Image 1: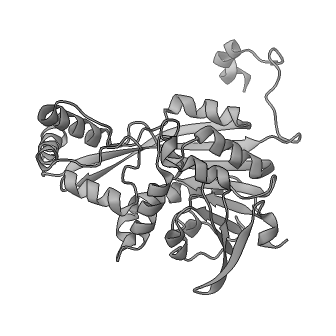
Image 2: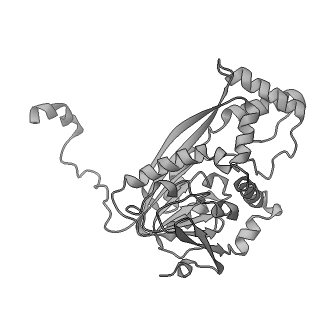
Image 3: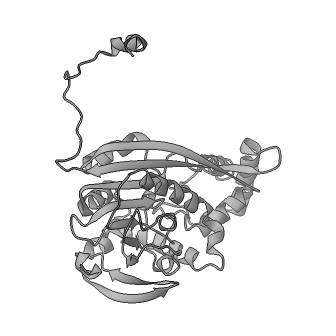
Length: 339
């Protein structure tokens, strides 16, 4: 089946050569709903300016050394790929939602994934995808409005992209819809404790210098809500776990520079457009005082949620009915005598 036949909306076909292979690239129209959700007037119900986020990611991808800021995405992409390898099967067709420059694809191989669709809202990121041995198709589309037909993919992966969507329940439903029965979704996203040091330092500095504060760090989903959202979207046999990655920097300004280079600058509708110089200097001093190490560096904590969910199929294993057990937990103490 041709790649265009898998799209449920209109799009124009582009061909792009990559070293050693050909990569087909589509521009998929997201429809009027995507445009409406990105309009400035929707700020009351949509926390993020998706058009600004697209500009930020496109700008980051055009920097002279974009790989300089890829260390976090590459680390998490590798951990998502490890979870794919834990499933002992081959996936004929896979989808990477919010792929960026291909941070997951670089770790996969043809024995695990035979063909991969890469979706991102930033076309510049797709133009600079990393080399992979897997045949790939790049589609420019919003992660909130996947332009694929139902029951298309055997595997969907996503790494550090879904924290910027305005409607996370809808995004999960879209992913569930494009999965085939018995397909699996494996994802990673930033958690609620991400950059708590930077958040606290900016808030304290603004309170001291300006008498109030506004949000400068994106709001994140709580881990207790993630399983419920996945379950409501239709996923079963869920696994959700958390991890923390701590990166040391020379100072607060270096953290903010790297976040900008990652395309992770704030894009909330209610963000404050200007941070005064005195407030920034105060925040840097507070950061150093509260969290600084003996060597003068400061830590930045990134909390990562990893999630795995399956689309239901009759052949899947199911939990046994309550009361059907033949052995009591009380007998476990006698297991050595029974062996």
